[in-house]
Every structure is written in structure tokens, then in C-alpha cells.
Image (cartoon, rainbow, N blue to C red; front, side, top):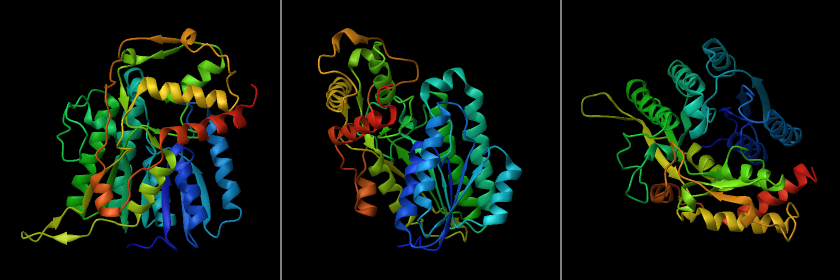
Length: 353
């Protein structure tokens, strides 16, 4: 296993939901090394939440033996990316910065091309010209589109994306494969399945629904509630990333004397898709338990069943057997436990606002 101790790790998207939790985990666990964080702190959602996560990182960094440096910058700024690689010489790159969200990609396509295509290309080019030992990058379960076969396997064909967001993530996988083949760059793509937890993304359903319910507004339940999602708690996602970081694909030479691309893709998902209505029921129960909502809250009067939204899919369901086979790990945190932690965090963060 590849040892992360003493390594310089570049993590993009660090004040983002997954990025912040990864950086905090590394700052807690590693006995030495350096973490370089990069993010543009854009206003896709409330910047104060990113600032909160960054402050949480700095609290841990203050007592960690690992040095942490945050750089406020855009992934699409090629000269900045080149300067970061030249100055810090990262041995491991974890690219989590991306413009996320299926629905937002319909109204703001430019943001996805800039961050997910141009930004990722800049990372690949920097890895090409520097001695990077492992590139780990975020893909998404969205690449499976409207696949009817479940659970979704990384062996499935994913050539028919149903949103621009999904298309950009599939493009990341294709670009990474080409660079792995051409320049022998060990790369691992991770297809995340509906990540949730404390201080998560406010555009995710569980979070936005909580905000609307707390404000006395109605929540819309898409496809009339006939959706299943493979929800994955943030701690499980981070555990998967850390294990993958420590196992770069092996460099090998083929019979033609050229590199066999050191390239892999994994799903990270709960493996137990939950019915959306059951998920909402548990969320409501935990919001009442945490004191976010009163015990006599009228849930029926605050929900509306509506048709499916463009770009959405009815089912996501991860086959994580490859992750378990190669790393002895599969997500285990159930939605009751995860939503309870979210509800308790929400109460402490927002108080009685």
C-alpha cells in the first residue's frame, strides 16, 4: 500500500462538501506532510457555508502536524494551476472541484464547461508535466443516465448521458484514460452516489427540503415520489477516497512496448437504494427529534407530488463490489444515522433562525 505520510497532496474543491471533509480527515490522521487546498469560493450556493467549512479546516490545521495552505483561485486559470504545481510539486492530486448539479446545468451550461472540462484539462496537463504519483478525481453516478439495468456497474456502457453535467463527468473519465495511456499517469475516477451529511450542499434535496420545511414552505417531491436513490453518507465517501488514494494503479508495459493505462473507475455508493418517500419520512422524524420542526408539524400540508424534472433519473443504485474487492470496504452508514447527524448539525448551525 502507498504511504501518504510526508506527501504533498493537492486537493481541489477543498471548502466544498466532500473536499472539506477529506482535508479534515487527512489533517487529523497523517503524522506529517503538506496539503494544498484550492477553490474559487464561487456563489453557486451560499458562500458562508464554504467559509464555515474552511474555518473548521483551519481549527484542525492549528493543531495538526500536517501543514495546510489554502489558495483562492479558479481551476480554469491555467497559469495559476501551473504555478501551484511548480511551487508545491504535489505527489498526489485529488480533484474534487467541479460545477455540480443536474438541474443547474440546464440553465448555466457555461459554468460546467469552464470548471469540469477546461479546469480538469488544466489538472491533467499539469499532471503530465510534473511527477504526480496518483490522480484521484470525482466522477458521478449521473454518468449512468437512464440505465435500466441495476445495480449500476462500472462495466456498464455509459454513452448516453441525460444531462450536460453527466456528459462533463463522462468526459473527465475519457480524458483521464487518454492521459493515463499517453503519459503513464496513474489515475482513479470515483463515481459518487448522492452524498449527504452535516454541512452538505444546500442544493441537495435533503438540505433544501429542510430549509423549506423550516420556513413553512412546501417541498416538491419529483416523479410523484417514485424515485429510488443510493444515498451515501459523507464519512463513507471520505473513507473510500482515502483508501483509493493509498493505492495508485500499477504502471505496466504492454506487449507493444507501450504503457497499459494505469487507470481505474470505482463506484462509491450505499448499495441499498432508498425509496424517496421513505427517505423523506425519516428526514422529517429526525428534524422533529432535533427540534428543527415542532412535533405537531403538518407534513402532508407541506408537500406536493410533481412530475420528474429534466435530466433526472428514477433510480440510482451502486454496485460497489469492485471497491470491496480491492479495498475491503463498502459504505455501511444507514440513512437514519446519517440524517440524524445532519438534523443535529442543522439545529446547531441555524439555531432558531
